[in-house]
Image 1 (cartoon, rainbow, N blue to C red):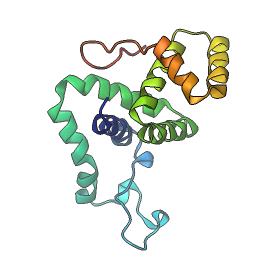
Image 2 (tube, one colour):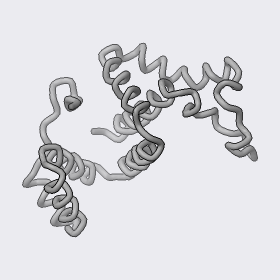
Image 3 (spheres, rainbow, N blue to C red):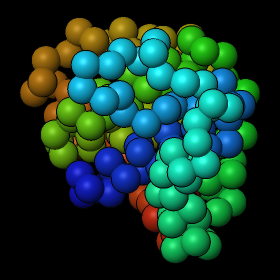
Image 4 (cartoon, one colour):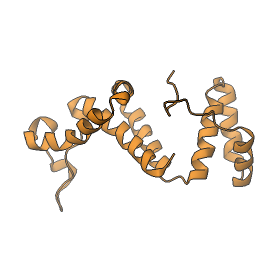
Length: 159
């Protein structure tokens, strides 16, 4: 997946969660130089123009990709159901993904594809084995266990 598409996906997932999450989880606009996030107002205290500025990118994505709307709503629903710790883990995962090179992303897709079919014990064992592998061993493992092919729509089905 090209880097721009991956960044869009990560940004979209976060944006959908922010837009549809409870107002307490919505992010205010970037702070002016010298201002701290603690000094910025809550969602309810933002002006209509500030709210519009935050929501406009999401509205554009929604309007320009009607085939993605169901997936976007599902992401928002899942985001709302996450605990604050789970949300933080998701954000960390998105940041890690952004910093992977294409080969590493392919390896992660292969690892994830393999792990989806495993029970908890086998999944833990595979993760432990993965952590001990050298980069060359990981490359060889990913070649021997390729990621499942993408479906016609380009997105894997959700469980």
